[in-house]
Image 1 (cartoon, rainbow, N blue to C red):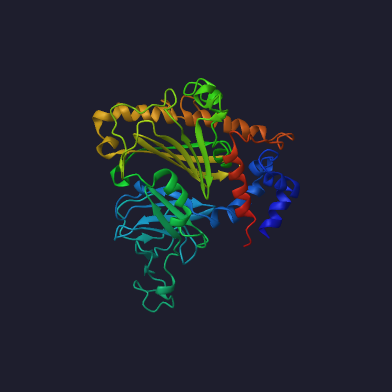
Image 2 (tube, rainbow, N blue to C red):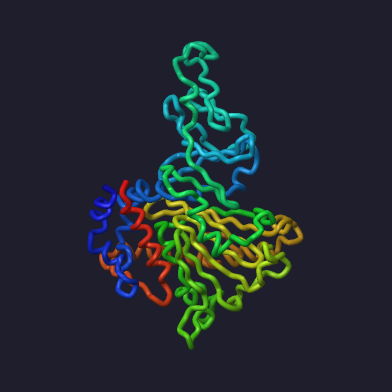
Length: 406
């Protein structure tokens, strides 16, 4: 059913064109970025089938902290239970289907529906249905309490990220993240990393423009103040980029070969991130995309994570978080150094509408692409085998999930 719907929306020829070898392949057609129907298909048959990053553990740091959020159109609750674990539930009252949690909360003892005051423990067990049978304790109620807890959602924690899997059928999170662990962060001492700050942006483009950006071909033109010459990214003798591309499982990554690019050297004064075999070398620079919705940029002195939240076919939210080593995450005497790291990534303006940081420079391109895809000639998208193997892989992996039998 999903495969036939996909073919109806994209066309058999367009799907086959993405599937061809990269040298002759064509990218996803414009409707995959502009069609409300295609976005609805992704909400129904892509995001529920995979592990989706929902939040940072720092969003609910203490027992009783909880946040409402929406994944693939489904309202959820993330909460820190009394044992310190993180739980996920459908944000739906078992009485009359009202939202149970309507705003972020701290220090809760229970969840209480605002409609008729049904209540649940932080672990999701039903604990009160006041006056359901006309009495305060509702002891004569026909409700079977053990069968009316908040409906749980599969949840997994990896480092500072909280993942959920809506259909409960994805492979184990540990298995899903093997390439990310082995290629990017597996050697890091995460116990030393501390949350520094988070920023929330929205932009007017489809969420896939982020994954489609996992190449460095655009650096010299989009990020000219950071990568001013093509020689920063291309070895003219070998004709090979100075970043290694790797696409494996749910991972797209780019790792710098050799010295850091100009203007991308580590910020002096900030401690380097420890690994199990010493500190990261000062030249370390990698940027990764964990499909479907995590950006992970790792430099010697900081980890930058971003969660990509699809809101509509033409609107996306980014939650951009920064992590540093130990007290360097919050120490007042290192504020200027932290600001310099953040300036580089998202600009001094801290605005998605400016173009003074790497990420908001990208956004300007993504929003322009979204407009351009309204053209009837926007379907003829090509790939460079030298630079864009990650993008070809990304689009094929999305088709793999969408064509999977229900």
